[in-house]
Length: 357
Image (cartoon, rainbow, N blue to C red; front, side, top):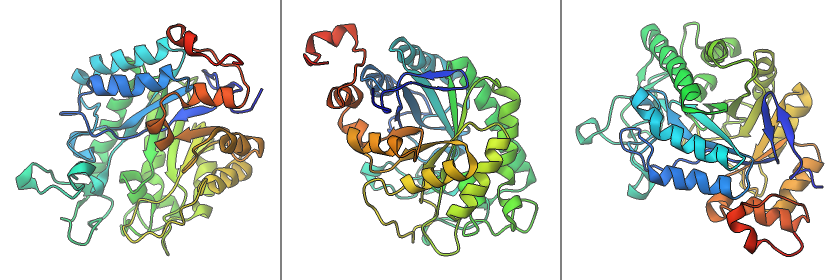
């Protein structure tokens, strides 16, 4: 059996293989509510054989949405439709996870197919908040630097979202601390110019994330897995570095985090990313080897052989894929045949199963 299709146990999660559907914003919600699009999008990937389906960045408050089309979990009214999604995923022998997020200064932007620019308040946008009052683009309206009251409210919103995630049936929470969103804005010295206890030193810049980890662990059962997605580097001079990511990951492990989902970039518009297949795998490998925490590799991984090689080289424990799962919802079923592994097909699809599989 390949490593890609071997099971792995993480706390009470029994993953049937190492393939994870990465959170992918669909920009298709209204007022934070999921709908049939989200059910079919997420459900089809579960039907397609992936072990873990992580729902797109789901805002813990209305002002935390990247766009007006983002999913939300700031209200109990959001829960019933989310329960329908998690129930369907579970019935396909897959795990339903949720990525909890706040976009910070990268909130109030239009959906990509309408240009993706910041929406002015008079056009239906909203006031944004951040670690410091620095806009993402020079011509954007600057966010409001969060004061003590805003930080306290954010922590309360996050705790409420964790409680609702339990009620909605999610079996995994991933905290989104990557891609230039709120936590990342606090982590990076390029976007955190604060002079209080949340700015300056490494210990101060990671403080908000560590506080929310502690808040989450007070609510999220100890036997349940908790992931954190980080951007391992800003890809910009003077920014958050791979060395800081290793240091942070060790502390996260000590404080109840079970896996680091290793992405990169997204924090500043002048980043310079050297794109190539598997360009972020080295971060997952270094964090795994230097801290001993489980890691997930992500980033231009688009075939079974490539994914298997990453696992065989002990560079990561899980393979997170996004674009390839958009192109091919049944990637897991087809990849098992490619690697000559056995995988259970849905009864409804067995007639299409390859003869050798």
